[in-house]
Image (spheres, helix red, strand yellow):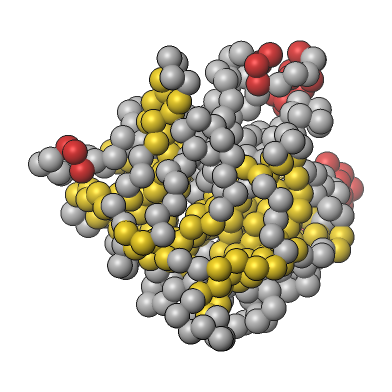
Length: 435
């Protein structure tokens, strides 16, 4: 799952502070949409349909003939929702639990620590109001945090609530907050153990009862490169050793859990002792935590890919360890970026959006897709109502789909519209045929 990567930028209306590029390039972003890095197919199929119109070849047969199910096909759909629709925002987190979608906080939200819930059956948004009698237990978070679902709790760590212009620091909490999705009550914790320095803008993911935190910035904006692991069952920060190909320091990257689905759906283990359950995609070699992209300490966008594996130390059973490995991929390398989202779905790691000041408009519309089974970047076909490319969006995997919300363009916040990206090729054929 993705936890709302954040790009610390100035007001979206002050373009000269955000990007040192010509205004003509900024205007080009207004029409930039997510697209395949290789092909745009809609015009091609329109021509085919026009050519065969009036023949015995049906629309569905024609599409089935030219859309190969052994290729990667994606279909975008704009989801029409109603109710207490969340404000357009950036840097929010989004999680899925029991047919409900939860959006938490984000810059330009109604208020700090705002929670909105979408019933994924009725497509109606509700405002979730905490039932705490003591407001001191409720977090004050605007953006830059990370969240995870653990059992029936929404776990929140990090993020900032305000900026002190005199001291030039952002207020960051060291606490961990748990929101009970069944009772709507917040509880705050101060976990013991190897306590990390408070941070914002970090990457995060969860595996079993482990909440893995990487990178981020402190209250003064100083970049951090360390890893931290929270045991969400015991509420303790776990100690461990790190070895392998340790990545260069960066910020605004992503962490994504890639495991057999049976592992991702359970909590009775930690990242260092995960069950040896594999499938034909997430096997012994490819299972792990994937880190992609980010912005280097020198301010250059990155497109490198690493896998992080947790394991018990064979010589010292009580000492856990992480092993970093840089992945050598094949296929066309993606455009470097930061502030993107990265989701594991249907056997692929799918990257959406991100910022790169060297591309026209500054925001990347290309959709890179990594086939996990062989670590190859694949070409894709994209269809449907593609949203505009963005940074700082929130995305979550639901079955074979990715739900996308919020983020920013160069000149404004992205609309408060929920988009769905279908990744199952057979379902894509049905969707294109229906349209």
